[in-house]
Length: 243
Image (cartoon, rainbow, N blue to C red; front, side, top):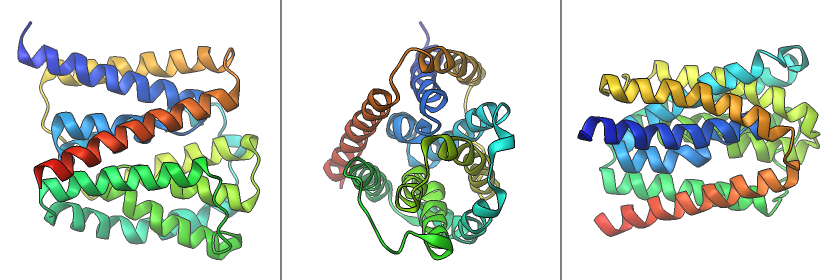
């Protein structure tokens, strides 16, 4: 098997896992896929591909739930994110790769750990909380590909139910990843790689939908969190090792 097809299979497997998780829980593509994509493609291309994949799978989920989006609540989040996305792209373009790897790994670990522990932060409430969470999420999404945890923490502190969170998280994923992609150049991948990625996105969306009907929500989210934590730890370790 050629190197191009080997890379395509690896990328497809990572994207399939991330897409399945996202369709299953409403969020999680970036947390699961970003560490693997960054390790395979490097920080720059890995984060861009993560932004694109997360945006596409969010749009697929949003197609069936857009009527439940709370636009008034989402405006402060997306406006704040739009303001910090360029800064995240600027920082990511200038940091040496080992530092960026370590930063991405650390960001994933801290963010996932905060969500797992159910951290309560008074500043992440009401409109002020939406602005803080959106600003943090936009920066992290553009620089490291992992903007979801900040929004998850905001939803947790704002008292959103799961039914409220999922469609709004998908709407936010579409918008913030569109912002992030607009600030960067597309990744340079082979035709087999793009074929594998596209197929994996569609297959992951279908698989996640099937799994959602048979998997308890609490178990699914905990599995996603542990996967993301492991990926973040590996990425952090590689960054520190190569410093």
